[in-house]
Image 1 (cartoon, one colour):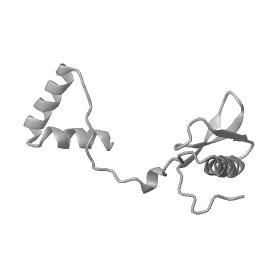
Image 2 (cartoon, rainbow, N blue to C red; image 1 turned 135 degrees about the vertical axis):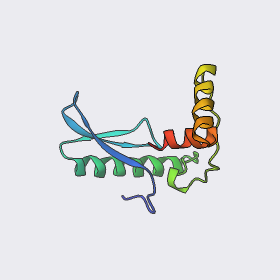
Image 3 (cartoon, helix red, strand yellow; image 1 turned 60 degrees about the vertical axis):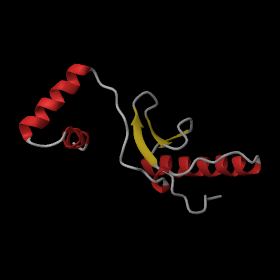
Image 4 (cartoon, rainbow, N blue to C red; image 1 turned 180 degrees about the vertical axis):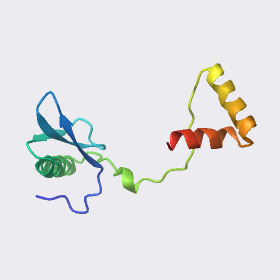
Length: 109
């Protein structure tokens, strides 16, 4: 059975250990599906997620919200060593931009 309005975040990658493709779902990190082709790995993980969501619904469990449907403020706090903070401040001052802009540019690369 296919999950209605499936908006979860899927990824398919190669597993050198298993010598197969592995399908993953970011919202369900404990789940995976191995297959000989990327298409089969994606199909398998989507089916597995659908079954797990159905089981969670049956048991009145909280179902993870898809990442794509979440709202983000654009703000988060990161703790860094003081020397890294200093270097970022110097780079920002020399560039004539804010530390926030420097960090945003570095993170987007």
